[in-house]
Length: 362
Image (spheres, rainbow, N blue to C red):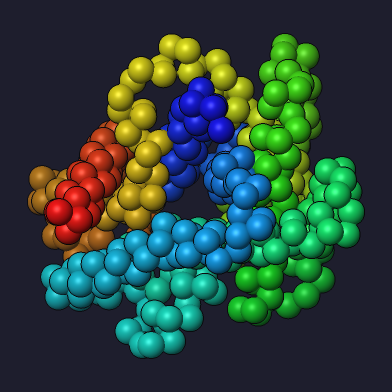
């Protein structure tokens, strides 16, 4: 993979994590693309872009690599935030999570990843691990069956549509929830793989005509949006972790595709101007740590604002984990502070990891 493309992908990762954090603050960085309408699909897409064919012949190496990069940090963060959650419970009288049982801390990460409220966004990590492992085996078998990219794209598209069909037709259980999320996310992993291998160097899909077509399509999709009226549902947004799709059958797939294209377009447009901005480079390199820590940083900001305004911190316990103080006034300062603090926390943790590794090696 060439350095230029890797750097572009790093900036795309930075944009993706900003979309996640802004979504949790309930505002959109990209206008007609509402929060939750595509950003998780974008992360699956990026994972597909970065998938290497060599792993198709070396399954064990790939799984071990993903265990080290995804699951091990997950359990370290869970242990850390379990301690933090216990401390917060002593101060506020509310335990921000599920009861501390072996089931909740061994099985729940793979069902919904919400054993702790503060680590809720990390549900994506265990789902990504499961999706990538399934993707590896699925692509291997499809290549044996018929080594044709359009046939593969068709099959993965069927997976996504099947996921949407299952949510509409079947009562949701824990096991079905995992199946639906995996089927839906497999399509976007393959879409990223397809883009990298067959589109990126062969077709220019970032022309004015493409921009116009995407805007027109998104304008049509907006007819199904009800985000401005919560009483009517979530509109173009969908909640993949709970497999909640409140739109006509194919809309979640289409709005994810338009959002992914828009994100790629923004990066293509801004990369020449922003490629040397170290903060963005750092952000793209530590998206895992931002995902893991941003709710805690928001929590601390809320506690500080409550203290400044003479309100007891127990007020936070009367709301859900995403509640922030005076959002009309403070949303954007939350966003800026959270992105700065979590990015440089991630940078510091990576340096610490490198130091420890080098110290052991010596």
